[in-house]
Figure 1 (cartoon, helix red, strand yellow):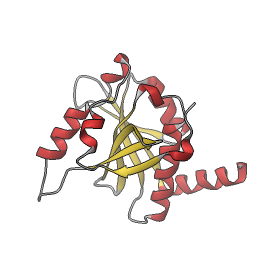
Figure 2 (cartoon, one colour):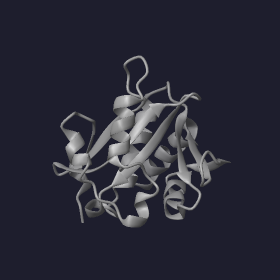
Figure 3 (cartoon, rainbow, N blue to C red):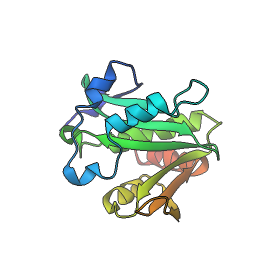
Figure 4 (cartoon, rainbow, N blue to C red):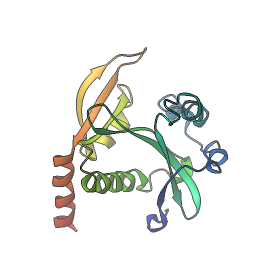
Length: 170
């Protein structure tokens, strides 16, 4: 099992793109997330005011790229989390939980964020259950494309409650 004591989350650097292209997912996972090439295209070409539409963060474990995700401040002041993917070699090692614990700590320290929000495909039941275990709630269903999406959120107040409960458990 992978040791998460070496896990780092860093902003994307130009040198990371080639490593992100090597991230492997199970075939059934690929339909739920944008490919690194799609993320790269949006990051480079969907700019407004010379700024990227979102920030890309790279998850590294023991100096290896284990995955990535994107963040952007949403219109309702929530930190929107997207494109989350973890390479097959690092899945089921607690990386998802560790990423959310760090995001929670960041939101608590950053009063400009009202919480965390994300979209997940209606049929992606495993990931919906994971996000629910992380404390996110199903808020609304949308259908911008062929498949409906759930909007999931956790407020800053609920994040603070969860962090307090972690401290009391540990």
